[in-house]
Amino acid sequence: MPTSKATKKAIRAKAAELGFDVTGFTHAQLPEETGRNLDTYLEQGHHGDMEWLAGKADRRRTPEALWSEVKSVIVLGVNYGPDQNPLEQMATFADENRAMISVYARNQDYHDVIKKRLKALARWLQGESGEDVKVFVDTAPVMEKPLAQQAGLGWQGKHTNLVSQEFGSWLFLGEVYTTLEIEPDTPEVDHCGSCTACLDICPTNAFPEPHKIDARRCISYLTIEHKGHIPEEFRKAIGNRIYGCDDCLSACPWNKFAKLAEEPAFLPRDALDGPKLAELAQLDDAEFRKMFSKTSIKRTGRDKFVRNVMIAIGNSGDASLAEVAQARTYDESDLVREMAAWAVAQLS
Image 1 (tube, rainbow, N blue to C red):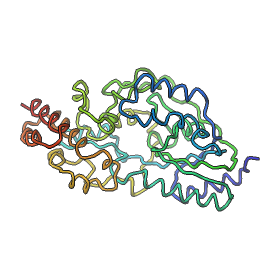
Image 2 (image 1 turned 90 degrees about the vertical axis):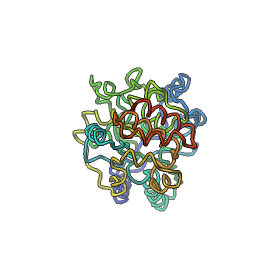
Image 3 (image 1 turned 180 degrees about the vertical axis):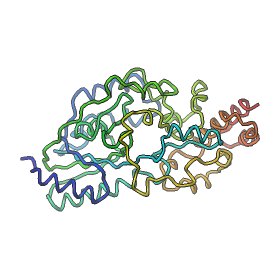
Image 4 (image 1 turned 45 degrees about the vertical axis):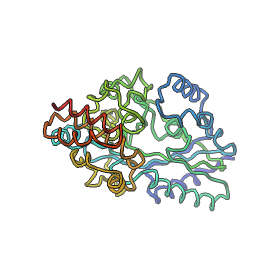
Protein backbone atom coordinates (compact mmCIF):
# COMPACT_ATOMS: atom_id res chain seq x y z
CA MET A 1 0.00 0.00 0.00
CA PRO A 2 1.17 3.58 -0.64
CA THR A 3 2.68 5.40 2.32
CA SER A 4 0.58 7.70 4.46
CA LYS A 5 0.48 11.47 4.22
CA ALA A 6 2.40 11.56 7.48
CA THR A 7 5.31 9.75 5.84
CA LYS A 8 5.26 12.18 2.89
CA LYS A 9 5.32 15.02 5.39
CA ALA A 10 8.41 13.53 7.03
CA ILE A 11 10.18 13.18 3.68
CA ARG A 12 9.37 16.78 2.80
CA ALA A 13 10.65 17.96 6.17
CA LYS A 14 13.92 16.06 5.76
CA ALA A 15 14.33 17.38 2.21
CA ALA A 16 13.83 20.95 3.43
CA GLU A 17 16.36 20.35 6.20
CA LEU A 18 18.88 19.28 3.54
CA GLY A 19 18.33 22.44 1.49
CA PHE A 20 15.68 21.49 -1.06
CA ASP A 21 13.10 24.18 -1.71
CA VAL A 22 10.34 21.98 -3.09
CA THR A 23 9.50 18.28 -3.05
CA GLY A 24 6.96 16.28 -5.05
CA PHE A 25 6.02 12.64 -5.45
CA THR A 26 4.95 10.64 -8.48
CA HIS A 27 4.57 7.04 -9.58
CA ALA A 28 7.35 5.44 -11.62
CA GLN A 29 5.71 5.58 -15.03
CA LEU A 30 5.51 8.22 -17.74
CA PRO A 31 2.87 8.29 -20.49
CA GLU A 32 3.72 6.55 -23.75
CA GLU A 33 3.34 9.93 -25.42
CA THR A 34 6.48 11.10 -23.62
CA GLY A 35 8.50 8.34 -25.27
CA ARG A 36 6.96 9.04 -28.66
CA ASN A 37 7.87 12.71 -28.38
CA LEU A 38 11.45 11.73 -27.61
CA ASP A 39 11.53 9.46 -30.66
CA THR A 40 10.27 12.25 -32.91
CA TYR A 41 12.83 14.67 -31.47
CA LEU A 42 15.67 12.27 -32.23
CA GLU A 43 14.35 11.29 -35.68
CA GLN A 44 14.27 14.96 -36.67
CA GLY A 45 17.89 15.36 -35.55
CA HIS A 46 16.97 18.15 -33.16
CA HIS A 47 19.45 16.81 -30.59
CA GLY A 48 22.44 17.78 -32.75
CA ASP A 49 25.76 16.52 -31.33
CA MET A 50 24.13 15.20 -28.15
CA GLU A 51 24.54 11.55 -29.05
CA TRP A 52 24.10 10.57 -25.42
CA LEU A 53 20.42 11.39 -25.83
CA ALA A 54 20.00 8.88 -28.64
CA GLY A 55 22.31 6.31 -27.11
CA LYS A 56 20.26 5.96 -23.93
CA ALA A 57 16.81 6.76 -25.33
CA ASP A 58 15.37 3.38 -24.38
CA ARG A 59 16.41 3.85 -20.74
CA ARG A 60 15.12 7.42 -20.69
CA ARG A 61 11.48 6.79 -21.67
CA THR A 62 10.17 5.97 -18.22
CA PRO A 63 11.71 5.35 -14.76
CA GLU A 64 10.98 1.63 -14.93
CA ALA A 65 13.13 1.36 -18.07
CA LEU A 66 16.11 2.62 -16.08
CA TRP A 67 15.41 0.57 -12.95
CA SER A 68 12.76 -2.12 -13.17
CA GLU A 69 12.18 -2.30 -9.40
CA VAL A 70 11.34 1.37 -8.86
CA LYS A 71 7.86 2.08 -7.49
CA SER A 72 7.96 5.82 -6.79
CA VAL A 73 9.96 8.90 -7.73
CA ILE A 74 10.66 11.79 -5.38
CA VAL A 75 11.35 14.91 -7.44
CA LEU A 76 13.20 17.73 -5.70
CA GLY A 77 13.99 21.29 -6.67
CA VAL A 78 16.49 23.91 -5.51
CA ASN A 79 15.96 27.56 -6.32
CA TYR A 80 18.78 29.40 -8.13
CA GLY A 81 16.94 32.65 -8.85
CA PRO A 82 19.23 35.56 -9.86
CA ASP A 83 19.16 38.99 -8.24
CA GLN A 84 18.78 40.73 -11.61
CA ASN A 85 16.95 39.97 -14.84
CA PRO A 86 19.60 38.38 -17.10
CA LEU A 87 18.24 40.25 -20.13
CA GLU A 88 18.99 43.60 -18.47
CA GLN A 89 22.34 42.36 -17.22
CA MET A 90 23.36 41.14 -20.66
CA ALA A 91 22.86 44.59 -22.16
CA THR A 92 24.96 46.19 -19.42
CA PHE A 93 27.75 43.67 -19.84
CA ALA A 94 27.77 44.12 -23.63
CA ASP A 95 28.29 47.87 -23.25
CA GLU A 96 31.34 47.17 -21.09
CA ASN A 97 32.82 44.36 -23.24
CA ARG A 98 32.05 41.84 -20.55
CA ALA A 99 30.93 38.27 -21.09
CA MET A 100 27.49 36.90 -20.32
CA ILE A 101 27.51 33.54 -18.56
CA SER A 102 24.24 31.71 -17.94
CA VAL A 103 22.94 32.21 -14.41
CA TYR A 104 23.18 28.54 -13.47
CA ALA A 105 26.92 28.34 -14.25
CA ARG A 106 28.30 31.33 -12.32
CA ASN A 107 29.39 29.35 -9.29
CA GLN A 108 29.68 25.72 -8.22
CA ASP A 109 28.53 22.91 -10.48
CA TYR A 110 24.97 22.23 -9.35
CA HIS A 111 25.33 18.53 -10.18
CA ASP A 112 27.85 18.14 -7.36
CA VAL A 113 25.94 20.25 -4.86
CA ILE A 114 22.57 18.60 -5.43
CA LYS A 115 23.87 15.04 -5.68
CA LYS A 116 25.32 15.26 -2.18
CA ARG A 117 21.93 16.32 -0.85
CA LEU A 118 20.12 13.61 -2.81
CA LYS A 119 22.45 10.96 -1.40
CA ALA A 120 21.86 12.24 2.13
CA LEU A 121 18.09 12.12 1.65
CA ALA A 122 18.30 8.65 0.09
CA ARG A 123 20.39 7.30 2.97
CA TRP A 124 17.89 8.68 5.47
CA LEU A 125 14.93 7.25 3.55
CA GLN A 126 16.57 3.85 3.25
CA GLY A 127 17.25 3.84 6.98
CA GLU A 128 13.68 4.81 7.78
CA SER A 129 11.92 2.48 5.35
CA GLY A 130 14.35 -0.33 4.57
CA GLU A 131 13.57 0.13 0.87
CA ASP A 132 16.10 0.49 -1.95
CA VAL A 133 16.95 3.89 -3.44
CA LYS A 134 18.85 5.42 -6.36
CA VAL A 135 19.60 9.11 -6.99
CA PHE A 136 19.88 11.05 -10.25
CA VAL A 137 20.60 14.60 -11.30
CA ASP A 138 20.50 15.80 -14.92
CA THR A 139 23.32 13.76 -16.48
CA ALA A 140 21.47 10.44 -15.99
CA PRO A 141 18.94 9.21 -18.60
CA VAL A 142 15.95 10.64 -16.72
CA MET A 143 13.05 12.66 -18.15
CA GLU A 144 13.32 15.20 -15.36
CA LYS A 145 10.86 17.83 -16.53
CA PRO A 146 7.96 15.48 -17.33
CA LEU A 147 8.51 13.81 -13.95
CA ALA A 148 8.61 17.20 -12.23
CA GLN A 149 5.32 18.20 -13.84
CA GLN A 150 3.79 14.86 -12.91
CA ALA A 151 4.96 15.40 -9.31
CA GLY A 152 3.38 18.85 -9.19
CA LEU A 153 6.54 20.99 -9.10
CA GLY A 154 5.66 22.97 -12.22
CA TRP A 155 4.83 22.55 -15.87
CA GLN A 156 6.83 22.47 -19.09
CA GLY A 157 6.38 25.83 -20.73
CA LYS A 158 6.32 26.51 -24.44
CA HIS A 159 10.13 26.80 -24.26
CA THR A 160 10.21 23.17 -22.97
CA ASN A 161 11.70 24.23 -19.62
CA LEU A 162 10.01 23.81 -16.26
CA VAL A 163 8.01 26.77 -14.95
CA SER A 164 7.03 27.03 -11.29
CA GLN A 165 4.30 29.24 -9.87
CA GLU A 166 6.51 29.75 -6.83
CA PHE A 167 10.00 30.03 -8.35
CA GLY A 168 9.44 31.00 -11.97
CA SER A 169 12.10 29.60 -14.31
CA TRP A 170 14.82 29.01 -11.77
CA LEU A 171 14.76 25.49 -10.35
CA PHE A 172 17.50 22.86 -10.39
CA LEU A 173 16.01 19.35 -10.35
CA GLY A 174 17.06 16.03 -8.88
CA GLU A 175 15.35 12.70 -8.26
CA VAL A 176 15.30 9.89 -5.75
CA TYR A 177 14.00 6.62 -7.21
CA THR A 178 12.77 4.17 -4.58
CA THR A 179 11.10 0.79 -4.21
CA LEU A 180 8.90 2.38 -1.53
CA GLU A 181 5.34 2.94 -2.70
CA ILE A 182 4.43 6.58 -2.11
CA GLU A 183 1.08 8.16 -2.85
CA PRO A 184 1.62 10.46 -5.86
CA ASP A 185 0.93 14.19 -5.74
CA THR A 186 -1.45 15.91 -8.13
CA PRO A 187 0.27 16.79 -11.42
CA GLU A 188 0.62 20.47 -12.29
CA VAL A 189 -1.34 21.83 -15.24
CA ASP A 190 -0.13 24.18 -17.96
CA HIS A 191 -0.52 27.85 -17.01
CA CYS A 192 1.08 29.41 -20.11
CA GLY A 193 -2.23 30.34 -21.73
CA SER A 194 -1.81 32.36 -24.91
CA CYS A 195 1.57 33.84 -23.85
CA THR A 196 4.45 33.37 -26.32
CA ALA A 197 7.05 35.61 -24.66
CA CYS A 198 9.65 32.83 -24.42
CA LEU A 199 9.23 31.91 -28.09
CA ASP A 200 9.23 35.47 -29.37
CA ILE A 201 12.46 36.47 -27.65
CA CYS A 202 14.64 33.61 -28.90
CA PRO A 203 17.50 35.23 -30.90
CA THR A 204 17.92 32.22 -33.21
CA ASN A 205 14.31 31.04 -33.63
CA ALA A 206 15.09 27.73 -31.98
CA PHE A 207 11.43 26.84 -31.44
CA PRO A 208 9.77 25.42 -34.56
CA GLU A 209 6.49 25.41 -32.60
CA PRO A 210 5.38 25.73 -28.96
CA HIS A 211 6.76 22.96 -26.72
CA LYS A 212 9.28 21.94 -29.41
CA ILE A 213 12.95 22.97 -29.55
CA ASP A 214 15.60 22.42 -32.19
CA ALA A 215 18.80 22.32 -30.14
CA ARG A 216 20.89 22.93 -33.25
CA ARG A 217 19.59 26.52 -33.27
CA CYS A 218 19.75 27.07 -29.50
CA ILE A 219 22.51 29.31 -28.15
CA SER A 220 22.85 27.18 -25.01
CA TYR A 221 23.49 24.13 -27.17
CA LEU A 222 25.80 25.98 -29.57
CA THR A 223 28.01 27.44 -26.84
CA ILE A 224 28.10 24.37 -24.57
CA GLU A 225 27.40 21.13 -26.42
CA HIS A 226 28.29 21.82 -30.06
CA LYS A 227 31.70 20.36 -30.82
CA GLY A 228 32.59 22.10 -34.07
CA HIS A 229 32.62 25.56 -35.59
CA ILE A 230 29.48 27.54 -34.81
CA PRO A 231 27.59 28.21 -38.08
CA GLU A 232 27.98 31.77 -39.28
CA GLU A 233 24.23 32.34 -39.39
CA PHE A 234 24.11 32.20 -35.58
CA ARG A 235 27.24 34.13 -34.63
CA LYS A 236 25.77 37.64 -34.57
CA ALA A 237 22.77 36.42 -32.57
CA ILE A 238 25.08 35.03 -29.90
CA GLY A 239 26.11 38.54 -28.92
CA ASN A 240 28.22 38.45 -25.76
CA ARG A 241 26.84 35.10 -24.53
CA ILE A 242 29.85 32.85 -24.07
CA TYR A 243 28.23 30.06 -22.06
CA GLY A 244 24.54 29.32 -22.31
CA CYS A 245 21.55 31.59 -22.81
CA ASP A 246 18.79 32.62 -20.39
CA ASP A 247 16.60 34.64 -22.76
CA CYS A 248 13.59 32.32 -22.92
CA LEU A 249 13.75 31.73 -19.16
CA SER A 250 14.12 35.43 -18.37
CA ALA A 251 11.18 36.47 -20.54
CA CYS A 252 8.65 34.32 -18.70
CA PRO A 253 6.03 36.44 -16.86
CA TRP A 254 5.89 33.88 -14.05
CA ASN A 255 9.28 35.16 -12.91
CA LYS A 256 7.44 37.92 -11.08
CA PHE A 257 7.05 35.30 -8.35
CA ALA A 258 10.70 34.21 -8.47
CA LYS A 259 12.84 34.41 -5.34
CA LEU A 260 16.52 35.20 -4.93
CA ALA A 261 18.65 32.09 -4.37
CA GLU A 262 19.79 31.64 -0.78
CA GLU A 263 22.28 28.82 -1.38
CA PRO A 264 25.80 30.36 -1.31
CA ALA A 265 27.02 27.81 -3.88
CA PHE A 266 24.60 29.27 -6.43
CA LEU A 267 25.34 32.96 -5.84
CA PRO A 268 27.64 34.32 -8.57
CA ARG A 269 31.39 34.39 -8.01
CA ASP A 270 32.77 37.85 -8.65
CA ALA A 271 35.12 36.44 -11.30
CA LEU A 272 32.21 34.89 -13.24
CA ASP A 273 29.78 37.78 -13.00
CA GLY A 274 30.50 39.57 -16.27
CA PRO A 275 34.21 38.80 -16.75
CA LYS A 276 36.14 40.90 -19.27
CA LEU A 277 36.29 39.43 -22.77
CA ALA A 278 39.89 40.55 -23.25
CA GLU A 279 41.00 38.60 -20.18
CA LEU A 280 39.08 35.45 -21.08
CA ALA A 281 40.59 35.46 -24.57
CA GLN A 282 44.06 34.97 -23.16
CA LEU A 283 43.34 31.85 -21.08
CA ASP A 284 45.45 28.80 -21.78
CA ASP A 285 44.28 25.36 -20.71
CA ALA A 286 45.82 25.48 -17.23
CA GLU A 287 44.46 28.95 -16.53
CA PHE A 288 41.04 27.92 -17.82
CA ARG A 289 40.94 24.90 -15.52
CA LYS A 290 42.00 26.98 -12.55
CA MET A 291 39.49 29.78 -13.19
CA PHE A 292 36.56 27.43 -13.68
CA SER A 293 37.44 24.83 -11.08
CA LYS A 294 34.31 23.20 -9.56
CA THR A 295 32.02 24.85 -12.12
CA SER A 296 30.02 23.25 -14.92
CA ILE A 297 31.96 25.41 -17.40
CA LYS A 298 35.11 23.37 -16.86
CA ARG A 299 33.49 20.35 -18.54
CA THR A 300 33.07 22.28 -21.79
CA GLY A 301 36.82 22.61 -22.22
CA ARG A 302 39.10 25.53 -22.93
CA ASP A 303 38.98 25.40 -26.74
CA LYS A 304 35.20 25.54 -27.11
CA PHE A 305 35.04 28.20 -24.43
CA VAL A 306 37.62 30.50 -26.08
CA ARG A 307 35.88 29.84 -29.43
CA ASN A 308 32.79 31.42 -27.86
CA VAL A 309 34.81 34.32 -26.48
CA MET A 310 36.12 35.07 -29.97
CA ILE A 311 32.56 35.30 -31.28
CA ALA A 312 31.63 37.69 -28.48
CA ILE A 313 34.68 39.84 -29.28
CA GLY A 314 33.67 39.89 -32.94
CA ASN A 315 30.24 41.11 -31.89
CA SER A 316 31.57 43.78 -29.54
CA GLY A 317 32.11 46.46 -32.19
CA ASP A 318 35.19 47.54 -30.24
CA ALA A 319 38.16 47.87 -32.59
CA SER A 320 40.54 47.91 -29.63
CA LEU A 321 39.81 44.20 -29.15
CA ALA A 322 41.00 43.34 -32.67
CA GLU A 323 44.56 42.92 -31.40
CA VAL A 324 43.34 40.47 -28.75
CA ALA A 325 41.54 38.43 -31.40
CA GLN A 326 44.49 38.64 -33.78
CA ALA A 327 46.73 36.98 -31.20
CA ARG A 328 44.37 34.00 -31.11
CA THR A 329 44.62 33.46 -34.87
CA TYR A 330 47.84 31.61 -34.00
CA ASP A 331 46.16 29.44 -31.37
CA GLU A 332 46.82 25.70 -31.34
CA SER A 333 43.11 25.01 -31.61
CA ASP A 334 41.47 25.17 -35.01
CA LEU A 335 38.19 26.05 -33.29
CA VAL A 336 39.77 29.12 -31.74
CA ARG A 337 41.77 30.15 -34.83
CA GLU A 338 38.77 30.21 -37.16
CA MET A 339 36.58 32.18 -34.77
CA ALA A 340 39.47 34.55 -34.04
CA ALA A 341 39.87 35.24 -37.76
CA TRP A 342 36.13 35.87 -37.99
CA ALA A 343 36.31 38.28 -35.05
CA VAL A 344 39.18 40.23 -36.61
CA ALA A 345 37.21 40.53 -39.84
CA GLN A 346 34.19 41.83 -37.95
CA LEU A 347 36.24 44.49 -36.19
CA SER A 348 38.22 45.64 -39.23
